[in-house]
Length: 186
Image 1 (spheres, one colour):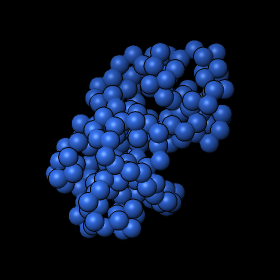
Image 2 (cartoon, helix red, strand yellow):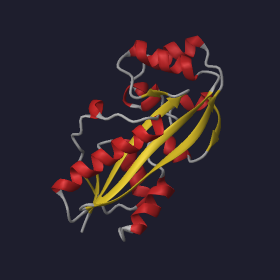
Image 3 (tube, one colour):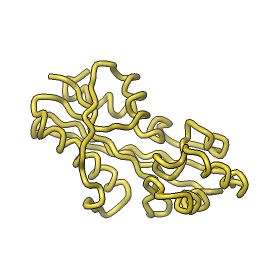
């Protein structure tokens, strides 16, 4: 049995190393646009489950981890921005407000699966327009849900966090470690 992370995210690989270095990456090819759910939190869980199950079909004897992170602003899902205009729209909506970050996690081995969602509330101070414009001209917002990296330049806007910091980066380390213990993978 080996441990597989079904994600190509460099941040998730970095955070997985806090749990174990004994894993490999097999990114899933799930068409995320086809998956629907009744809430942003359920969407994150459904996406994570789809990714884990897709890879687990190919590797039924291994423990597979699927993850997906969405930003929830008053029930609207903010995924990765399509372009500069989309990034600006998201960041303006988050400015001066609290939003939620949901990361779905699914751990599978064969047909056995356990899934959960970790939610963290993030408070942003009002973001000056010139800072927004400068930020969206960097590469940082474009491969991140909500168009920001809490571990990057967006840290200066974060005035409070309730919940797991690592969840905001895309992998709630403590919650994942608990699931992996259930599967005897730690």
